[in-house]
Each structure stands twice: as structure tokens, then as C-alpha cells.
Image (cartoon, rainbow, N blue to C red):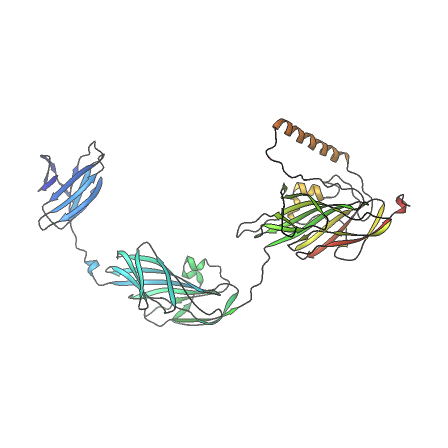
Length: 516
């Protein structure tokens, strides 16, 4: 218990001096070894304000003859009481004078219209306990948020926002709401308005959400403005059709009105995934067996799977995504479901390669006849297709007019095929180690370096498995394409989704090559 009397303080019978300077008086209680120290101070006067350092002021009482304070110290530092005569603040007691700024954004949607408003108050005189905003009858307020907002209510067409404590300088809060308007045609824009202000500024912006635009407008009490003049929130909108206005300076009670004419357009579907290039290598045999390597360069923003319908009787050997083996799923209709990579929202989707190997058994060839090569049907459109066809050396081939046309071999165009692995698969005469003569001419066998490379790969794989122990998991194989025989190259453009392209061939045994 500490009692102050005059210029000295009694603490357990020991007098402590009271220091005075610049209209303030203070006493300092020394620190102790205890964790918490409780101190009660009595001052024989009233009408004083007190500050505390080194502890927490827990209780403050004042009577007609004295002031009493109860505080708790931290124990490891001095506890200091500082007090001075209470100053009367006549500024707060003066009549309220304030200015305001209200910036409103109305977003016209097809089903509903949303509203966003930022309110800034500047108190010139007095203290503001609340702010009032006049509301049109068709607006529903969903939320009022701000650091100084205690509560809000709507009554008699007015939104009243109550502050946590009287605002003496400035305050800011945000209003969100919605209203029901017509989908298109003539629309009267509902405008909010600050009340009890000497002058208000700000503006209003109107945007159209979805496929539509503002064709005409009429305004009263507003001046044309740029969206950047109405703050960061309005300036950051990416609306294709927006108009912005400033409130015309002058009387805060001046009439303001805004109406717009909105035209809506039918929205069209946007392609979210596409096979920008498909490349096939096909090895035909006179026994009717066909081995097909299919590679697809795909760009994807939304799809999880690619649905692939193989030709009748086809058996899949392997599948890989971006060079890594994958296990395809099976749809209810028997088609394959292959996983796809997906880009993040807002990013430009890079192309990646999806590859499958499959085998088809058809009718064996005779000396002369027709053969049909059916390719898989995809549930995505294909922009461009290239097909490299290897056939038995004892036969001549001619293609029937149709989806594909014969052309000179061209390397893949898509950037997804530019990796080292894909260049080895498709670049003729360099990456694959095969010297091909296209358009019906014979080609050489695999060269010696390709055989040595393949043998070395098998040896390295055996050593890794023998020395490294058992593999952690068994992955699907990714076979190499056995390119052999004369070749023809075919191209095609713009294949629709769920359509299986096919190539009609006429074959005949070549008597010059030892045939009958």
C-alpha cells in the first residue's frame, strides 16, 4: 500500500520522493525478486489521468476526495506511476462536422447483381459515433466490415454503422450487398449515398459480367471518369465492358441518377484441351499383323483423362505420359482412359506427349488386294496428323483418296516432340539410326551403333537390378518401334473428336523383288 502526501510517498515507513516535471508527477517503485508485485496507490485529489510503465493498471477508482489505483508489476523492473491533471477536450464536445467519400462498384450479372462500396469518413469537428448511408429499397446488404465497425443495422431505408468508439479523425469500412436487376435491356443503377456530411466525394462504376456490353447510358449529377480514378479495387477489375463516373462537386444533397442499356450475347464454348499434333508409326506385315506407335502432343487446361477408342481387335502394349510409363484405365464402353497433365488456372498450358503402343491382327495379305488401316478415335479434336507407314518389301502400296494424302516426310511441328527422346523416335536418318528412303523406296536395316546402344542398355539394366536388389515397383514396359522396310508418309488436318481416321490401301506383290 502506497500513500502519496505532498512531495513524499510512504512505502513500509520509508519515504520515496515524488518527481515533478512539465506538469507531470511520478513515483517509481523499485523492482523485486518476486514474479508479480501488487501495488495500490492513493492520491488525495481527483481529476487526474494516470499512465503506467513496468506493469499493468488493473483498477482505477475516483471519489470526491481522492483517486485510487491498483496495479501489478512484472517484478523484474521498476513500476512507475505517472499522473497529471485531466485536460478537458472541448473538441469532442463540439457539434459533429464530417466529410465523406463513397466509391461504389455495381456488377451486372446474368442472374444477380452484386454491389461493393468503400466508405471513408473524415471528422473535422466533434466525434462520430456512427455513420449513416441511404439505401435504395431494392438493395440487400450482406456484410459491413472494417477495423472500427462494432455493429450495423438497416431501418427505414438507412444503413446505420456503429463504431467501437467515437471516431475523432477518420474511419473506413466496406459494404457488400446484392440486388435483382434485369438480365439485359434498360437497367436503373441503385446508388448508395452518405448522410450527415458537409461534402461527399467518390464515384460509381458499373461493369457487365459475362458476354455482354453497355450500349447506352444516362446520368445525372455525375461526371465521366476513368476506372483508375476510383481506387485500386475498381482499377483492378478485368471487365470487358465498364463505365465509371465521379460525383459532381457541389451540394451533398444534389440529385444523382444513372441508367444503362445492356446487350447480352450468347456464350460460345471455348476449347479447353486440344491435340495439336498426332504422330503415328505403323509397321505392316503380310500376315496381317500391324504394330502401331501413336504419340499425341496435347495442351490441356481442364481435362483429367483422354478417352481413346482402339480399333476392333487391338491389344495395347504400353502407354506413357511425358516419357513416364502409366497404366491406362478402362471406361464402361471398353475404351481406354489415359491420364493427362493439367495446367494451373491462369497459366498458358504447355504441350506434353502421350504415347501408346498397340497391336492389331487383320487378314493376311494375298498377291493383290485391299487393306484398311484404322487409327484410334480420341474424344479431343486433332489439329494435324502425320503417319509414317512401313510395309513389306515384296509389296507395292497405293493409297485410296480419303482423309490422308501422301506427302514428303516432315519432322513434327509441336514443341512437345523436340525433346531428345522424341527426336530419336521420329527424326529420319539421325536420331533413330535408320537410313530411310521414302515414297516407296527401300530402307536399310538398323545400323550397328543402334544395335550396340540397345545391347548396352540391356546390360546396364541387368547390372542395376543385380546390384541394387529387387525393384521397388514394376513399371509397364516402353518398347522401341522396330522400323523396317519401305515407307510412305501421309498427312491429314483437322480431325474431329470421337472420329476414327482410317487409311485405305491397295497392295500388290512386286514381281521385280522376286515375286511370282
